[in-house]
Length: 367
Image (cartoon, rainbow, N blue to C red; front, side, top):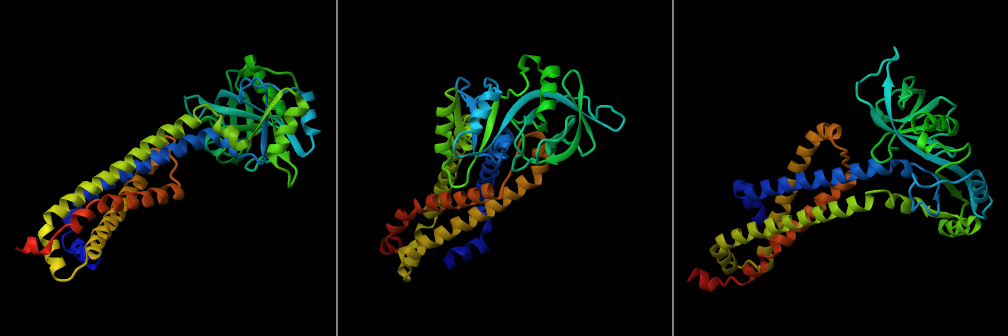
């Protein structure tokens, strides 16, 4: 092990090619992971923000808010189910909006896509519904308290009374309003989705303490006979594109980790061939096979850690630009898992040369 570290210190340039390749792969892995997290986070914030354990759709909606409708009688029946502690309607309308300045002029020429959320039940990230004509707005929209958001072609104005974080829906900032304001938005901006008072696309359900949400979900569907009740996690998985994105990015990230192992294997295979005579001398002087292999593994770990630091530093330096251009979200968990995976695959690649080290015969090499 000491020999491996000594060689790294005295001849760092010998490991430059492998380190550079691994640093590039680290940058790619972190970028892909951050992009995946940003896409998933921007699509699922509305549901992840909920304090409710269950969400109820009409049984023919296939877990889609757009296709689902629940009338007041159905929502009332849900509230009477054993194990339900609270129930509230939920509706979402995806429309265009502009943030107005103090003079009532749009801050930009571009129309922002937003998800107007009409709700009755407070969420973990969102307080109780605001008064009519007011809204809590996701911070990603760039509006501040006191600003006015003009929604839809009719420019229905709502005043921002609070900012909330991480509540986007399908990559659109959430604008959280009272049911009455939500009905006004639908009537003015999306008349095709207009609903009678008290009708919502879905219902959120909080369960009583100590009651299994899955049991309550079955009771709700039995009691109404016309609903499909999912846990919040299942509803997130059912959102359009979530599973497809996770599957596609998972394959690409997994393949990139395999490439890391291949790069490490090829590099250390070449190193082992070049050092065959040196290994023979070391064995003749008393070094064990395990000691020589440990030096290789030590070098693989150090090179991987340095490459990870370089790749992470590069992506952090560019994160400001990335966040404005793409839905990029780099978490500590993602960075740590990438670093651990990089080290593991580098070690696995280096160990593929262990057999060659084992087979070196000191006598034949020296002879």
